[in-house]
Length: 352
Ligand code: A3P
Image (cartoon, rainbow, N blue to C red; front, side, top):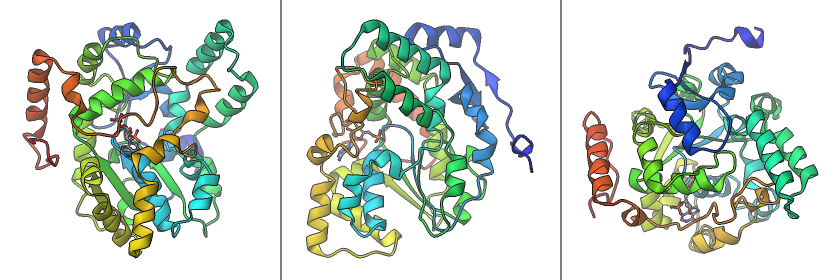
C-alpha cells in the first residue's frame, strides 16, 4: 500500500485563534500546533507527515518501548531498561549515546523546519563562538527526519529500543499484543515544574513566560502532548496487560533496587548483589548528571540549549511546592481532583 494511503482514523483540528495567540505570546518559536486523536492531543503540525506511518508501524515481538509523558523519568527508565536487556553492557552504553540507542518515535516533530531555521539564524546573529554551524546542519538533517523508515530497516535479529511520549491512541492499535512496553508516570505537580524548565531549556520551544504563565497554559492543555491526564489514563488502562510494565518515578526514587528487580523480572533477567550495586550506582542522579551518553549536553554546541538550564536537573520529588503560590495551589488541587474523578489512577506518596 502506498504510504499516503495508510489508514489513519483521526482528523486534526487547528487551535482556536485565542489559543494560538497564547502560544505565540509565550513561546518564541514559529511552529504550528494542532490537536489530534480522541482527546485532542497537542502535537506540532509536522507530526502529520508520519502520523499514519507510526499508527501502522509493523511492530515485532522483540521490540522494547519506553513510554511516558515528558519529564516523568523517561531517560532514567530508558537507561535502566537498556542495561537490563543488554546484560549490563556498560561499555556499549557509554559508547553509544542514548538518543542513538533509542530512536525517538515522534522526535522529528519538535524539529520543525521553521523552528530550525530560526535557531540557525538566531545563533548566527548572536555570533556565539561555541556555535558550530556545520554540525548544526548535520544534526538537524537527522533529527528532523521521521524514524519509522529507519526502524523498518533494522535487521529482524536486532532488538529495537524505541522512546515515545505519544498517547496509546496514536500508536499501532494492537501494539501490546506484540511488543514489551515499560511506562513511567510521575506526580503531575513535579511534571509541570520539570516541563516548565524543559520548555525554557530547549530552543525548539523557547518558552519566555514565568512559571505562572506556564502553569496557566499547561492546565488548559496548551503544551506539547497535553492533555496530560488523558494521555496517562490511556496507558494506565493497559497496566494489567502482561506486555506492559507500569512504573512511577517516585518508586524509582524511593527504592531503586526494587524497581530494578521489577524491570529485570519483566524481561526474564536476574541480577546478583554485586550487579545490583553497580547498576544502582550507574543510575544515580550524580552519575547521570555527568554521563555524556545521556545528559543531552551534546546539543549545546549545536545551539539548541538555553545557558541557564540542564536536562538532568534536580532529580527529586516535591519540588513543585517552591513554585506554586496559594492561588495556583488551589487551582492545582482542583485540576487533579477533577481529572482523577473518573479513574482509579493514583500517584504514590502524593499526600505525604
Ligand atoms: P527534574 O526536572 O524534576 O529534575 P525525562 O527523562 O522524562 O525528561 O525526565 C526528566 C526528569 O527526570 C528530570 O526531573 C530529571 O532531573 C530526572 N532524572 C533524570 N535522571 C535521573 C536520575 N538518575 N535520578 C533521578 N532523577 C532523574
